[in-house]
Image 1 (cartoon, rainbow, N blue to C red):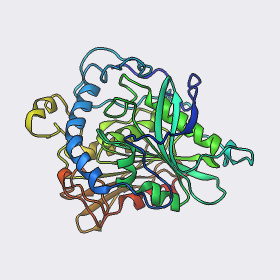
Image 2: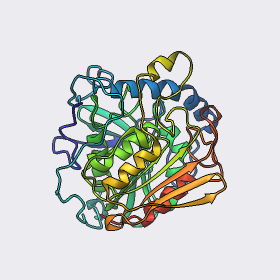
Image 3: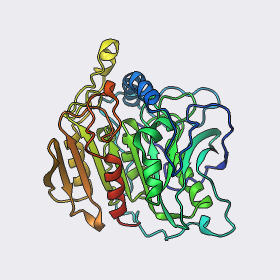
Length: 389
């Protein structure tokens, strides 16, 4: 399978401009500030339930067959290099050259901290990069900063507005002092392009988003993070390597097995949540089980087990054996605290949990939700403690 040739933390070929989004209706036009989001949760729930099964199977199939995603339409942007051939498991994140220094301290204040900087307000925005106009939601905290920055990545068939509402990261993150960016995948596509697959270069897009926020908000370049759901979780995990050690930490909800670690990742904090009854990204690995007419497509996909994936990340980061605890009756936590340079790894396993984000919002069509486990707050707690780059 081919690899992205240009997935660095600062893509030199990317030219980015940002403007406030127009007022016309779009799939992600929703305010994402420190105040509560007004998105209709029940509508988001119905949409996510009806589309995620189809999207998951379709995107996983195109990601693992021939190393390609769905062909781009004219004007949809650059395609990442790919090669022919088949693969029955998810791609690994882009590997870094052994021995390369990837996690030097990058400084505590971005250029956007200057008094003359043009600040971006909370709400919908656009970023034009690689010939594509991309949309994203921004939540800006109060206070002078510099603030940590968090990418909040939606799942397959979903969108930025639904992810903002479901994860609640824009509201509670902004109250914690985080600048929260909730991006939208490329126009006309079901979801993100993983680093090994063809399509718009989403690694470069997300790096450009981080650069844009650094220029126009008082951000902390050494404290940048990514969190995601399902396929967005797979992308978040792949960014550990694809962004060349830029991120201090990532969180993967219901999707950690979708991308495997590279051989030499920079020490990076990782927190994952996964239900044992997840039928779309099975906890014990194997084929997704969407049911119905999509089952024949799911037979083409073999996902590794969740615990095997976390063990692989621990081995790649040279972490020693984890400690095991049970913070709640049906929740087990495996925690690696002896990783190099202060990084930690944690896996919350929810007994009977479905393809859902633990917390107060339920999506019954995707399985059981652990409402007494607040993944969003635990993610932010973990990121608060993560070492600064």
